[in-house]
Length: 136
Image 1 (cartoon, helix red, strand yellow):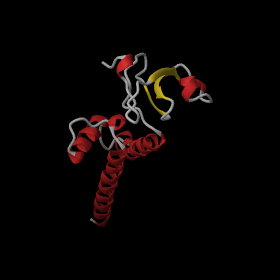
Image 2 (cartoon, rainbow, N blue to C red):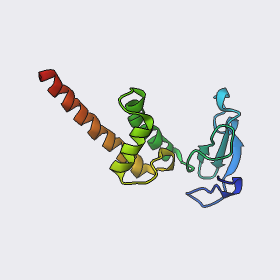
Image 3 (cartoon, one colour):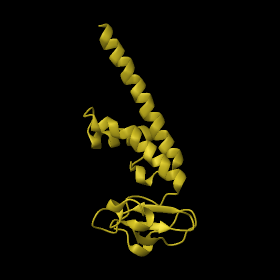
Image 4 (cartoon, helix red, strand yellow):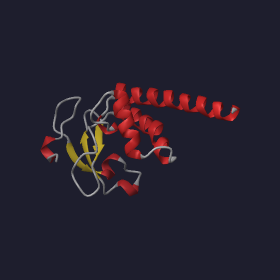
């Protein structure tokens, strides 16, 4: 389990400050009471698991936050559609990426782009199979 003092900014190496969500999202009242780790100089932050101080991943700057949202947008429909289970998606993705720990909150920008490319390839294969099934 992460200790408050152990969460460091990957950009500058300094200790991240724990803040309320109201500091990160002043216009989103529903997030005001959530906890975040913030490196203000780097504009990098990460949320925590509900009811704990354990970070959801690593601190992310704007570019990385956008990349992670896009990666989730690519993989989430695979399990939300019922086509695969959530754990099945992450297990498959870990094998495709040749990583032991498949967690988008730990990925960098390049890995997020890799996620999107892998999912796009899968979707292309699914489309081909669907077209073949229509013919037969």
